[in-house]
Length: 412
Image 1 (cartoon, rainbow, N blue to C red):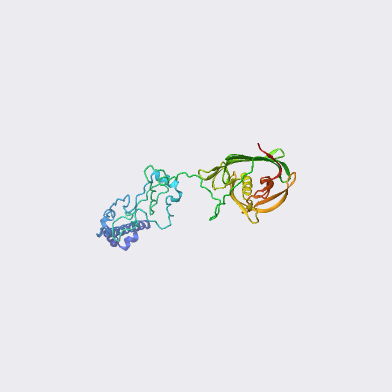
Image 2 (cartoon, one colour; image 1 turned 90 degrees about the horizontal axis):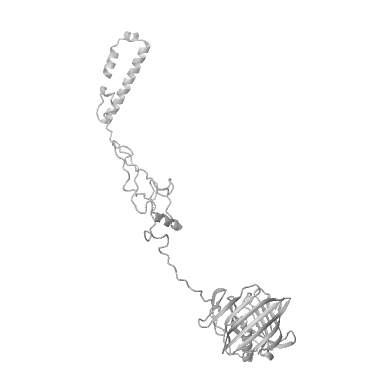
């Protein structure tokens, strides 16, 4: 068709061509351009199919092209399957924040390898030169998953392994230790020997009347000492301005070492009563208001019995009344405190009482620290070494109470 058209145009004479109108010439030229374009297009398609194009094939140039359809694979075997984690796995991850599921890296980061599969991820490859395979046949579609699942090129996070299918999170390896009782708290320093025990000669029963002082305040008080065979009862009451400042009650046994307290009850103004219990069977001191336990050593006294115990020790061993001598004993309070009191002999002094002046022997308890109770006590040798004056200072430096003897009354 192309050759015939060209030949026909060549056979035309110049005169005939000149006779054509301008519009006809333009139409002929446009038709020639169309024929030329179709011829070139057919030549190009004929080269792809491997045969030379023919003039008659210009209209149907696309028919000889071989088109092969390639099915797209749904997933590549080398890519780990993205699955939703079981319910228990998600619960375990919430219960254990330190072992939370891995978060996929940003899209611009280098892809990570899956802990379950170390196979390399597929890469995009185009068809080789001259191949008729369609571009994109090796592409793997991105799987749709939960927000926490991996995207294309990233490994899916491994599920958290549980001990059983219905195991509760973080509960499989937890063992509950049996409840233990309170530990006994020692009060002796490392390597410190316990205080010695002493022989005693306790005073007879009596009621001691005192003037009670606390700072500038004045009141009345009494100590009721009642030994009976191998037991005793000892009570201290102090009142100031009609208010009961202190009531202490010590009860226990009397053995070869003197007083052996069994129970101390301590009632302070505007405070609830507290008690210390001395169990000689278990060798412990327990407290009503505290879980603390203290070891019960031989010769241990409480915060009231120590005064009568000291009088019995000095009465039985007056040779201890020399400069530099000390009498040591464990003193326990009702609120869990326990300390070794070292009572230092401070000589003989004349001390004023409410009615007279008494020549007494003085002992001082110097605390081991600024927070320990400081005590001073004067014993009257003429009255069975009963305390005729006593002062206690608490850890804050204030006077806990001060006793000045008024009189001693014999008990029936």
